[in-house]
Amino acid sequence: MRMNPASSLRPTYCIDSGAKNIRDRASKITASHRHAREKVRSIFEFVRDEIAYNFAPQVRGRRDFRASHTLEMGNGFCMQKAALCAALCRASGIPARIGFQDIVDYKITGPFLELMGTNQLIHHGHSAVYLDGRWIALDCTLDRALVERKKYRLVEFDGTHSALLPETDHAGKPHFAILKQAGFYNDT
Image (tube, rainbow, N blue to C red):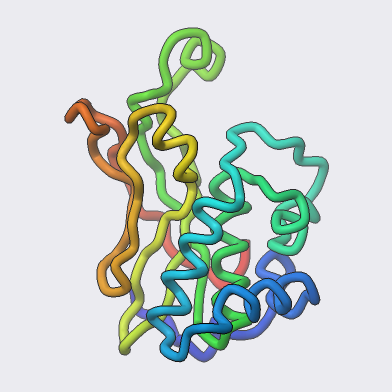
């Protein structure tokens, strides 16, 4: 990922890191941390676990993709959670972007698979942060409560390596496969 980190610090329409609720929450989440790595880990865990995953939220317009809206709602799907993670990082002075992947979710089965007609998800949203001179991909989509209930693997961020959706569940059965990394952007 070759991207200028300085261009990934300012607020944008969806990654609205200048919104009051975003600035306030970022300050609260990162108050006890001095280093960027610790701040990102806390932000990642907050978005992953405190913003519940909602596979089918009501989306009426572009406004519903704004990070401040997702924070206010307390839930969201992948793109919304990715924008929120990026906004909280930017509000904490850490360059961040949103990215898109095409993935397969092998857990989409039964009536839902019939309704969708596929288990491929196009434009799955995740984030990237700039730490220690390099970009690191983060996926905070699936919250801990959902993962534990469904017996999935929890995505964890160690502060150094990418944290992406796991290939298998706890039983070792296929869960996710990345078909294509579509890129990372300063806004959606």
